[in-house]
Image 1 (cartoon, rainbow, N blue to C red):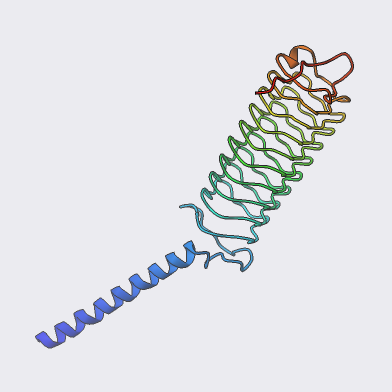
Image 2 (image 1 turned 60 degrees about the vertical axis):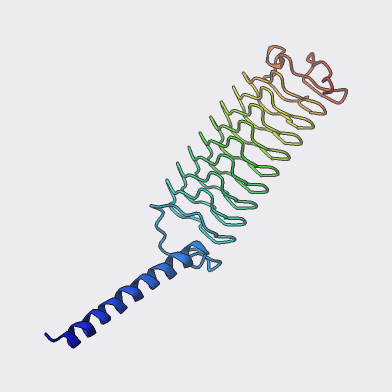
Length: 255
């Protein structure tokens, strides 16, 4: 083989390698910027083995098997996950504002410090979920299964837990102001140190639950059951606080 032919062969090989690298880079960029997801509807085949932290705003991932998926740090505002299987998924630090998780199975998922403001979890399974420090303000949990869920220090202002089932759920130090628990079953739940200002719990069951150090100013728990004097240890309220007959709390001290 002469020198001229050898150089021509090597040059062709170099062009192929460079073209291949450019294509791979373009694919990676397309994936991260949302091109592989974008707003084109639900993707046909998604590999979550390495997770996803790009944008999927408004995309449709309903009815999918996303068990163990790593979506931490991703932007999924207004996305649809209704009916999806998402057990043990990792959604930490992501943004899921106004997303739809109705009837989804998020058992034992980690959504800590993520933003789910205005999202819906109607009829969803959230058993054992870790939502520590998560923004779930104005979210709808109507009929959801939240037993053993951890909402420690979560922002749940205006959240709706009507008809929710949450035995052993933890709301320690959570902001639950203006939240609703009508007809909820929350036996042995922990509301210690929680902000329950102006919360409402008509005909809810709190048997064995702990409200110690909670702020119940303006709250209406008048028709709730299971609340005892012992469960209200060091809790406080104001002149608008309504509790079951025979129960009362001292006025909260201004800080």
